[in-house]
Image (cartoon, rainbow, N blue to C red; front, side, top):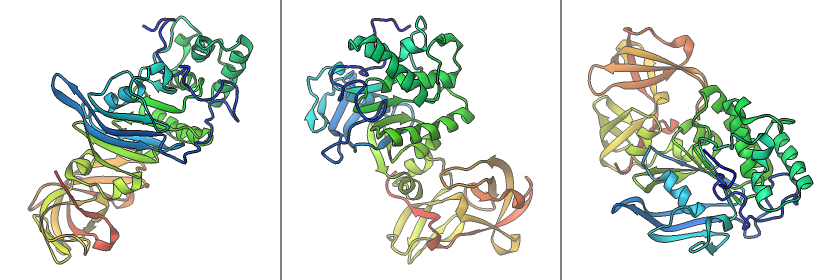
Length: 387
């Protein structure tokens, strides 16, 4: 349980935080970076536990006023990376630079970064205002100025007038907002979020993701966030970094990663199941599902091929690969947008297929359908790189 002598916001509120509380254009706002980007850089960062690498020579960059999401399965090194940046875990090799300054030997509370945990770690013996103002009080800010900033921050996160409420009366979403206000209070130059929405139900998580992106954009906050939820990462981030076994598997803008996964691991982690061995030659791929068009610049040879569900088209049985509908999953909008149905199809040959179709055109389970594949220029097939 958090106590009053422990700053569980990680490094939020440390004396190294840039700016003076109460200064600046808005509560929580960050002054422009005169260097024009590259606020955070990791160079060859390695961390080993019992001789095994949790991070393996990781290079990473987070530009000022942007949100970078670390995405990956449990054990991929995401939270360890946050702890290294925060100064809570010393790397065995490599460098962490903030504003171009090597952080080796810089104490956690002097790095000027904020860390918000999944379980929020609010002080149960303090009310909302006491939690939000904790870091400011520890820095010796006058009582009146602390109260003014707490009120402004609660307005900012959508909890106006909630300062006197006990923590025990808050819903999960309200606790998340209080924890965010507390992390923003000392105006950290870098805000780090460790699975901030992981304990919330899906509807609330989706709504708060949209609100957080808008808030960070308005404040100009630089954010490094960890999540295992693909939808959350693609909705929140300006840049996505997919991690695997302590290494960066792919890094890029959300749509770039979604459209062109670099490897079978990334494709499957993003939820794509239509991956098959293919022999690529002359703009087409021979697969267990038949001949599939591929981009003309695809290298010839034995490859692994991804066909997104949107690239699997339902046609009359006589006009394509014969399949049986095994199951239907109703879905809402994702990174590609739109509502509809995902069908699980069992073809006469080859592994199962997933196909996307509109609600109005969704066949019943057990129905026989034909399948054809989208043209190469529609961008629904991807010749994958490594494993």
